[in-house]
Length: 433
Image (cartoon, rainbow, N blue to C red; front, side):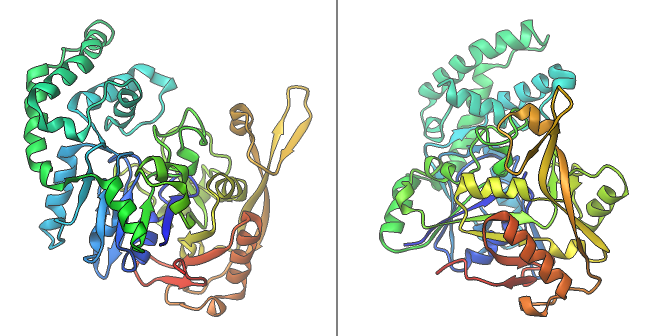
């Protein structure tokens, strides 16, 4: 009965898609449990590269049933653009299941997201403008629209009207924008609902039955630990819970059915959007990491901010997620460096001029924003490691770097990514016992 949760252990873009795909052939179900189409996974199969946003990474594996759980907010139009794109390339998407309880991103959520972010000016959060935050806000405010609402015209019209009552007042009076038409929005959502209907199911029931029958389910998180609305660098976070606990609330599967929690971490760190990032490199080193790692957003194309590996962040991810394993990705990107810095702690200057050292994540976000990294350095390597499949065949300095990351992360490293291809991996420990 393995129920396995896979999450990002940093700020996202760690390579979760590759890790999911690695286990996907051994999985019966792969379920997305949070986020929306602001998440992006890249899966490389042979010469083919697939950029996934809403669809679970298991969609590429023909033996896997991909599931979009109730914790995801679904832009139905974007979902079908993605399905159409994959089917045109020969990928069968007919196995997809979408939770009837998942919330919908309506057209007005995208409008609100964009005008609000512009209005915030220098205080902006750095959202993708795709309506994810406003959709989650409606969910919490109990004026959201769920998938099953799309199949009852009168009921849907009432819900859209209720949701737009306040929003239109705000658009007109605060943002000087035109109001959004209730009838037009309802008709658009009904049209999308007709096409979505064959995919809709009680996914909580299906996943629980699968686990009870001894089948394997991989719970796939979008974004990452440091973007969690409760545990991340608030307010510069996403609007959901990408941490391991979100797998339960986002799919309707109880915690006693989770057997393993796997965190994915890059051999360095990146983030997008606004917010503090202690190890960020602004000069040549940051540019070098970005170029070597091709660090541009799958969903947005935005250049990612780049910095050195932050062990404080990874220890924190291990703590709040209860990690059992780490998949370390993009180790090959560091090839060619003479020395590689590792952040092992932070120092924060206090108002009285004294300095406090933090070996663990500060709970005070002001302290985290002011944190200066404490580095130690490890020698680098020059050899190409992309074709290495045994840990002992890695250069000695590369092995030492991985062992040091494992030691200071408080979690074993079970898999190492050594390149972009599907087979560019080193498996030290099995992820599925």
